[in-house]
Amino acid sequence: MIMNSCEEFKGIRNKMKADGQDWANHIARYCSCNAQIQAVLEFEERLDIEKMKKAVRLSVDAEPVLGCSFVEDPEEAYWERLKDIDSVEWCMLEETEDSADAVHKFITSTLEPELYQLQVRIIRSHEKDTLCVKINHACCDGGGIKEYLQVLADIYNHLCTDESYMPEVNNNCRGDTAKVYRKLGIADPRMAYNPQLAALKPNWVFPYNEGKPDKLKTAVRKIEKDQFNTISAYARENGATINDMILTAFYRTMFDMLLPEALQPMEIYVSVDLRRYLPQRKAAGICNLSGVVNARVERKEGETFSATLRRVSTVMNNLKRSNPGVHSAASMDLLRTMKYKDAAEALMKIRKRIEDSGKSSPILSNIGGIAQYPFRFGGSTVTDAYIITPAMYSPSFMLGASTYHNNLTLCVSYYEPSIHMGDIEKFMDILQNQLSSL
Image (cartoon, rainbow, N blue to C red):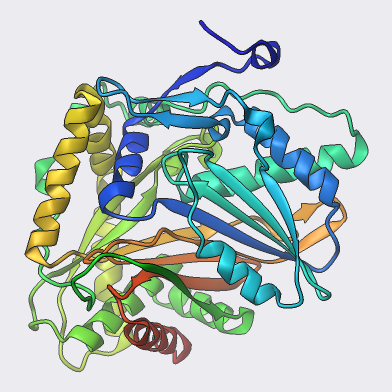
């Protein structure tokens, strides 16, 4: 096995296997989305800049995939460590008088995965420090970026007491879907693939215009603690989950905006964190370990929120009885039975059919809780945190959700002029009103 001498000393492999989900998310960059997942953490106290820079640099050794490039070998794509890893500026400080504007500029900037998979920015204003993290979706999903934040905090906290601290290298950060299959008694991914669970032919779409994506934009709305507690209580009273509540609001917002034909099943893809099947709901490292289920709910004229919620909750409970998310994960793993170039061609053809149809079922990606409060980096406590989900290329559309300290953040990343800001603002207004009027 070929290694750089310094990397060999640390026990870091020069090459690593790329999973089927890694392949799919890398290919998605070319046709489906910008394939970047981001986290924003706000602090009241100051961070130690030099310690944070060191922690970030050490994190790409602790989780080696972050210090790699994705090699598109036509036979079998894989991860390969950067040869000039110490020349990369992994973490930068930006001092500003307008932190909100600086954060917006960072989260609407584009990662260059050909150069690096991770980018961290500390934005410092008079009022606060804000830590922004951007990761290539080919490396990890929403659950993966949450795990990365824990890794980073752990390294930073160790450095606060021991400046010579070196984290252990995790060379086992791929292949977690195999552990899921074993846990569920599935001997072969082909056994988990069920064509009957495949998506319906899309019959609706978020409003969009023809044309190439140009300007990346992000819309973020907050549901503060008091209202979130009201939503939580309402969910409990109705035997539902927070995810059911968000999905219900999503459906009702789309019904309001699009007025689809009544009593016709409309599909929304709902993401599933497959870590739910592993001990402590934890993967071996930073990775992609997600699936989706296909919720189907029809519009009913004049229906109340509680009535829609009951139907949505019933649909989701039924889906949960059949190893939710495993079917779609298996379909991604089956890509690894093909040559990479053939897998890319197959996914591109599927995307072309979606674009030609002009319709695409929307997606709900609820990342869930980011960390337990208080989440600390040394003596600095995270006061607010949220995840920014990828920007989809039209006609695809994704709503992201995440929580921290009983605050819910909803976000949509999108491109102008493919999607009008006015349509996004209308969508977010209706969505927020659905959840705030209980």
